[in-house]
Image 1: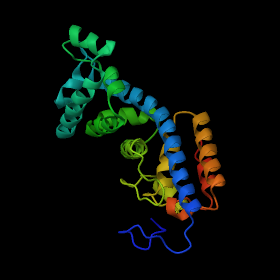
Image 2 (image 1 turned 120 degrees about the vertical axis):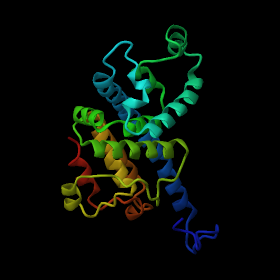
Image 3 (image 1 turned 90 degrees about the horizontal axis):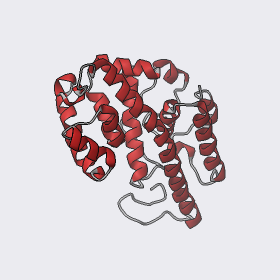
Length: 252
């Protein structure tokens, strides 16, 4: 977009090189593939934590299906939307053994850990958002983060995942919702724009469950930027010049 004379047409500015445009296309492609792989690691972890945290507080009496009761959720409209969406998603897995088993033996009711395995990550995020503060707090404490920040980060990761899945542009793009960070972190790093790709990269980095994955993500992102540094305008992806220092300081 930054090479066009006018955003509404396809005329490029004089001096624009096809090689540069192609390289930025490759950067987008590589970053989407990279983020998708690492988001999957975070997904597995948070699906488990959300299912476990809710179950130990709400699903305490046989037949342990309190997650089907909308009264156990604060945002009942949001919960209903999630479950309606899940009913459609479940049809994709109708031939799987686990779905068939619960359909025959339990009239299609499934334990929460099975549901979250089949749900899209977007619905996982919305499910957490629909919970009462008490359950949100339990889950947030399990993963060592504030409940509002966890809710925001799950939303951010679901947005990033969807962009990756649908080949959306990463470069020169604003992201919504703005990523949430602590006040002290933002005061220390006023150069970070919380609606940028860098902010979302930090969210992913913070939410990865193990240090090895975090280090691997940092190294991969650095390798991409180093390879195409002559073509990338760091400002258009929200990466400050000291991005490596910031990322390395968030490995633990």
